[in-house]
Amino acid sequence: MGFRCGIIGVPNCGKSTLFNALTGSDVPAENFPFCTIEPNVGTASVPDARLAAIAETVGVDTIIPAFIDFVDIAGLVEGASRGEGLGNRFLAHIREMDLIAHVVGAFNDNRKWQSDIDVINLELILVDLDSVEKAADKAIRRSRTGDREQARLGEVLEHVAAGLQSGVAIRDQILEEQDLQTIEHLNLLTEKPNFYVMNVDESRLIQGEFLSAPELDDPVISICAKLESELSQLSPQEQTSFREELGIEESALADVVACGYQVLGLITFFTFNDNEVRAWVIPKGTTAHKAAGKIHTDMERGFIRAEVMSCSDLISHGSEHSVKMAGKVRFEGKSYEPKEGEIIRIRFNS
Ligand SMILES: Nc1nc2c(ncn2[C@@H]2O[C@H](COP(=O)(O)OP(=O)(O)OP(=O)(O)O)[C@@H](O)[C@H]2O)c(=O)[nH]1
Ligand SMILES: [Mg+2]
Image 1 (cartoon, helix red, strand yellow):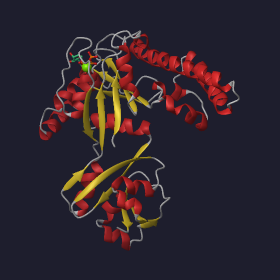
Image 2 (cartoon, protein in one colour; image 1 turned 135 degrees about the vertical axis):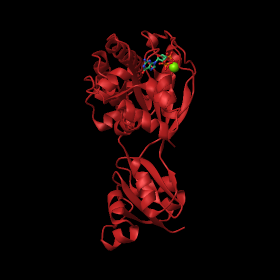
Image 3 (cartoon, helix red, strand yellow; image 1 turned 180 degrees about the vertical axis):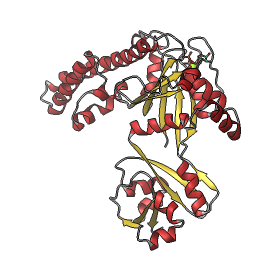
Image 4 (cartoon, helix red, strand yellow; image 1 turned 60 degrees about the vertical axis):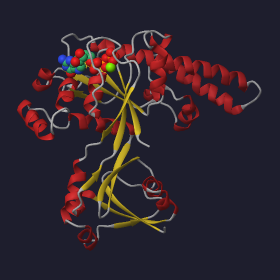
């Protein structure tokens, strides 16, 4: 299953425009608030130049990239946590996401975007505070019968609530891993990994303004959503020449996806056979055994070993055989944790 990234922000900040650019869709992106009501869902392939390099080295034509789902959600306004605007519905959609891309409309001249960020973050904190306080009351009530687990849960929740009350998102609170696990079932919004997408005007992007991003608690990238959505309608050749003309890097959309991967703690590994090269995405720390299961359940069941080489070794040596001759293919067992950019061949009993 792919990872789902929710695109959130105040009305009219460019969420649908960014969504169109990322997914090659054409949903309405108009200059009036609440243009989007029902969420739009689309898939973006994860651009990765290494795929083409591997394909060329091993002489196959088919490239299968990794994918990420983006969900364009209705704009959020002050008071959403109390049901203002599209309030509750909007928030229910965010709850289903694995991560959040918080779009900041910085393409106008005003500096209102700073307060826009605070409005959204405060609303998310208020929603969590409400859930956490209710859950804390329940746990404390239950603990009165001597239930130690509920008592512990109550303590953790009260601690989290205090943090939220002082305006700290859960992901920025200092919590023990086991405490985080006890509150996982609540699926809280400010616990989700988050990054900011500064949607800047194309002239500012060209001038390099905003490229040194403002200081925020989570990673920030700058993009001109309007320009990117226009470019995404063009052929690849036209895109390249336009970008060169404007002096805008090719990687703007790739950066959005890469940033999402970074906050989720994901890594990419590759497989290839006679027909295709393929990218796979797993959370850092996943074992080779589990990673094999992602490729095929038979591979997990009959797992013998993983043969591992680095992508750069394959490209520089020119063939799998040469990498083997150079002694740079390692044999690893079930508990091995694949690293970023490795090429893996699973040997298994079918
Ligand atoms: N100049 C400029 N305008 C932009 C940019 N991105 C979006 N806009 C404009 O801002 C308006 C709103 O864009 P949308 O993408 O619909 O915004 P949204 O956040 O989806 O809005 P809602 O769905 O109403 O919450 C449109 O008129 C866009 O053309 C940008 O990078 N530069
Ligand atoms: Mg929209």
